[in-house]
Image (cartoon, helix red, strand yellow):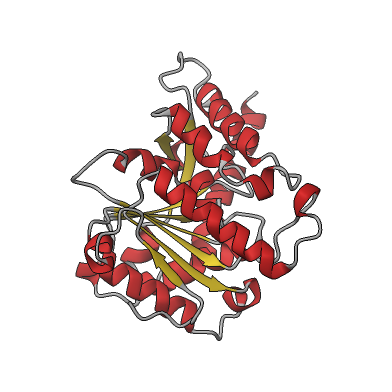
Length: 281
């Protein structure tokens, strides 16, 4: 597959031909950084794990060069950090039995530049080849600018596809902002209880981040367990781990739907419920 960056790469863990591997995709996660996929889209990984009739593909848009670092990684250059993170992501892809992994290798600045068409073009071409049913990406209320930029590029790429080639669903997932604040009617509840050992192992692969000063492994599992327990106040738990998502599907069904107004709708509905409850009580 032709991608714009010479340094980009498609990695196939089981050594199938690239086109055949990508064509197995039923679920795809498109994240900004290495380990975002494992944090936000474990639902897709678990749905496809060990299944011959489904395939999970990961796409990492940025190069990882600007990652925070400490401990044994404190003196690493940006180029060394980029290589470490690439290796870690490949390990996760092999462990999680991804059908394919695309490393697009853009800088954050390139992703956030709305006048740069290459990111959108690469994502569009990957989606054309993969034809997934479900897309996971960042939620539009995330507090990380690069995450939101990736979500926007994904929506823009899908909007360039013919209607018949578009995925059935696109979910904006939790990373740098949880979605427990969404009103219950707006929550997409994704059960991530399956293969707990695999979930923990995938997060643990990213040693450069964990030893580098960010316990994403503990934080992610903790958030998922908290989501499951606090989901319903009057019901017993039906899952041990849950991740929430924002349904972005209407944005790829109606190209005229304003993205900013759409995300404001979630916030406005939350505000109305909170204000209404205060008045009632």
